[in-house]
Amino acid sequence: MAAHMHASKNQMLVLAGTSHPELAQLVASKLGVRLGEIAIYHKPNRETIVEIKESVRGKDVYIIQTGTKAVNDDIMELMIIAYACRTSSASNIIGVIPFLPYSKQSKMRKRGCIVSKLIATMLGRAGLSHLITMDLHQKEIQGFFNIPVDNLRASGFLIDYIQTSLPDYRNAVIVARNPNSVRRASSYADRLRLGIAVIHGEERMPESEEDDGRTSPPNAEAQFRDAFGLEMLPRVAAKEKPPFNVVGDVGGRIAIIVDDMIDDVDAFVKVADILKERGAYKVLVIATHGVLSSDAPRLIEDSNIDEVVVTNTVPHGAQKMQCHKIKTVDISVLLSEAIRRIQHNESMSYLFRNVGMDD
Image (cartoon, rainbow, N blue to C red; front, side, top):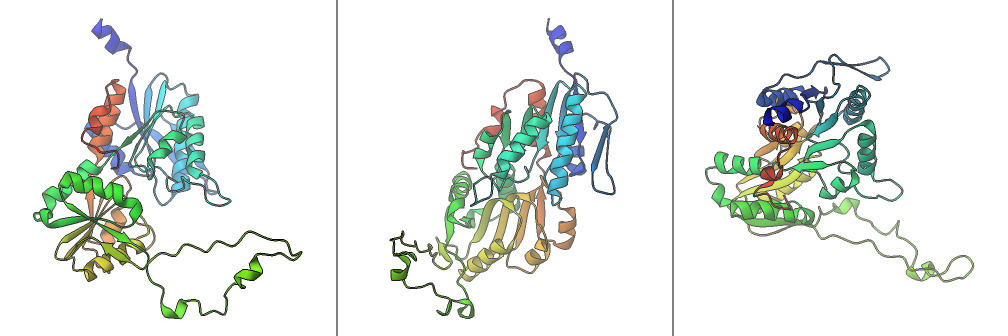
């Protein structure tokens, strides 16, 4: 009976998009399988062409594709591969997207839209039946999908890096670079049994850029009536933030800034400057997704940041060549174990053991 059940199980096939072939190869090797044969290329007008070179009929297909700087190409390529598998009668199509594109656009902004919801809808319509991702920018994004989503956590790997690579990590303090990051920082601090510090406020404007009154709005009295003399609602003053301030003691200690991603590094550089001014003798930035866009490597190299530690959810080989401060933690074993458990209908809860809700 057991042999019959094993024989009737769908065969597994792992396909790789073009966004991160190194990670796909690492995952496949840890699973003990080969990557499926697939041809992906672009026409001169940038249209994406996908041709799967082997049968997917009745198979469980895992598509490994992450978000990079070419985010629109990545997401379109993923949907085309998924739809090609769907129309070729694949049994299940599981998207393995370590860094989900557009995850920062998960809230309504004026006359914009919630782009993460749009992405979730399109991926489901393209044919995905399950999604594996890692450290979503907002955990509520899982609710945008109509398919099962496994949001894995990289915190265990990053905490292990801190404990093994920093001999004096007991003299460290976990830093939240803004009040919104306090929960994540607290989770790291609790598991490492360290203290916490919080950066509050914003950078003070230079005097030359401050408003000198020549562009001031009209008097408040004039705002209460319109051209017809009718009363109007009073204008609400914009909320002012205090200048940068560090809540907590960082003097003579290693300051470890934790976040889910590091893309635009300007804010991290400014926080590092403040921490060094307050006496921190070393500043580390720990993040899951190292997007590191634009001239991030140069800015990091010239900054007070001593080390940037990211996982390989996003390819950053070129950035590492430009900046020796960038270190990589491999999380391919976590993705491969998630795939293995899904393929064998095993519980995923083991992968979330000792992981806090705020990681």
